[in-house]
Figure 1: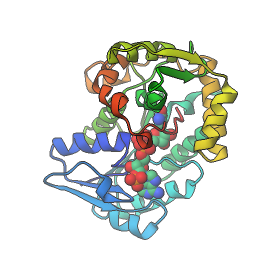
Figure 2 (figure 1 turned 90 degrees about the vertical axis):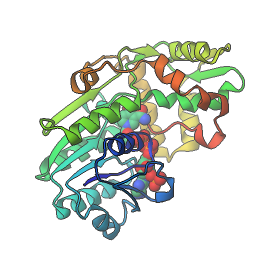
Figure 3 (figure 1 turned 45 degrees about the vertical axis):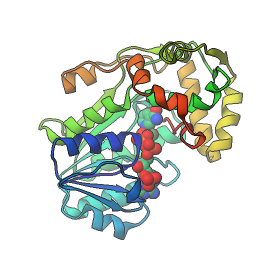
Figure 4 (figure 1 turned 60 degrees about the vertical axis):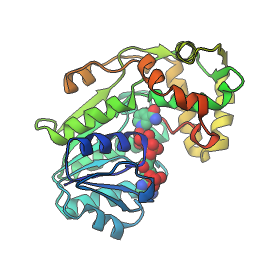
Length: 295
Ligand SMILES: NC(=O)c1ccc[n+]([C@@H]2O[C@H](COP(=O)([O-])OP(=O)(O)OC[C@H]3O[C@@H](n4cnc5c(N)ncnc54)[C@H](OP(=O)(O)O)[C@@H]3O)[C@@H](O)[C@H]2O)c1
């Protein structure tokens, strides 16, 4: 049985969907299992909070492999709880969703340090591991949905290019690592097929939606103020530091990992935008919040 955490989230949900379609016995966890959309024969959805070691012990029982995705750099004990539960249950191989920022020698923000610590802890745990380290998700642009109502996209460093990745490709790499031999002890840098700027993303989105969008560059201070309204201060500070690394062109390197691991090329932003156009036309405000990047 494979255990998938974050199964109601962006990458965990896509990992769960692919594994379920391929017929693997699964246990999918989130705090509220009703938020897990994936089901089917051999698929069990369970509620477990990363802060609850007893619930995690129950969730990991019988698991041979696990996909671990967490999202709170202010609660590193949650990651410790997950590893302890995996080790106690006799899990053999953990595939961890990390972030490509860990390889940037000039990145030293809260989110980067947290991912580095989590990787080190897993390496030292004695479990077999694979790190999936994505660049920024293309889906972060869903955060623009609200301002699209006014026909405007606002972002800092509009011309800085980022090798952003389709989260479905991130999930596919994780699924290969979970289900095929030979991925143990590997750290995968996962990017899209090209580095594109926010202004280019806005232009491609406009073409996909068939409407005019104006790109407006804002300062990093403005972006930081906006982040601080939506995230705890230390997380907002870290996300602003990530924006500055983007501005320094530290996120533009393209890797061929998706093609090498899955046998097909990584999806481009146009494809992602086409497949998610409805979310930009109809996105309710609650779904238009960007997620912490840490990439
Ligand atoms: N966005 C990017 O550009 C980017 C790039 C590189 C790396 N990353 C990394 O990707 C990770 C986030 O992945 P994602 O975007 O797929 O996540 P996500 O969509 O934010 O979903 C988070 C998942 O974790 C679950 N979860 C959160 N807190 C929990 C808790 N206390 N107990 C149990 N489950 C909990 C949520 O379930 P419920 O809320 O339903 O319980 C949900 O299923 C982060 O580590 C981030 O640094 C992101």
